[in-house]
Image 1 (cartoon, rainbow, N blue to C red):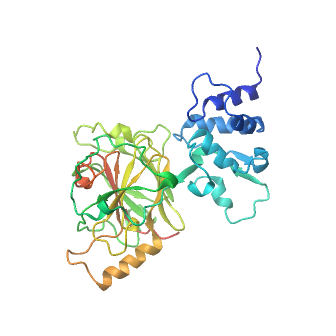
Image 2: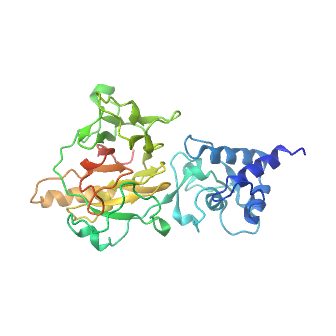
Length: 359
């Protein structure tokens, strides 16, 4: 009749497992044995993280590897299996997000023997397919079978390989900022990226400059910090029905190897970036990024190589801004969809890298 606080926490976590039906208090033996080994404070932190669904930034959940007993799987992998992705098999499929304290300990000897097991401090790693599927090199030929207008979110393959959706035509572009990335109107602070929000062919609101190493781009998150799309000036334009579905949106972070995005929403993102294609490609491929996945959208080393190649031999159709990246929310574009160009997508953003190299 009277349950301890610890027992209540365990039961609530068991009910929060992925695929758990209402009233299933017993849970799997693996989940039971794991959770019963945790201390009350660990259970509280883990429950707070699971209840947040990634909508707010929660604390790290430090758990010792010894808390797994005889199981060989790492504790953070097990937490991801229980509360986010049952199909994950090993840690090589996962990537830590930049705000996790585990990132700051990488490369150092971990004398504590603990690892952060907050499942919302971790994303699945999306690897672009190589080589691309044959249709992705066919110029704007629409397949007979069109996808429905509401793009599916469950087609991402095992190990996070992206679903490439075909080419997007190259466009002549002009950079929006100088290469130094210094804003003279903002006290000389150094920004490394500009974000422009578009609805079809119309730009909505002013350009957003990114100064911090990580930024959220979202619809209307009460506790969010970053670019809130709903607050941008619309000048009498009605809100697209697609926009509220953006939800938590995405997180963009500048890391040592490049710039990454993490899909925080419940729907797919569609990404077009020179960093995700072959060096000599003139029709960059659109990649589909499922919810919960991360992908590198800008490679520092590759961008320098592409710039050198462009200087040696300018393409016949004119220069292309290699620092421009386009991302659409929910709706894809290209020959695999009903929208051949991104300017037909209801909600999309353009990222202009101004000083993306490591700080």
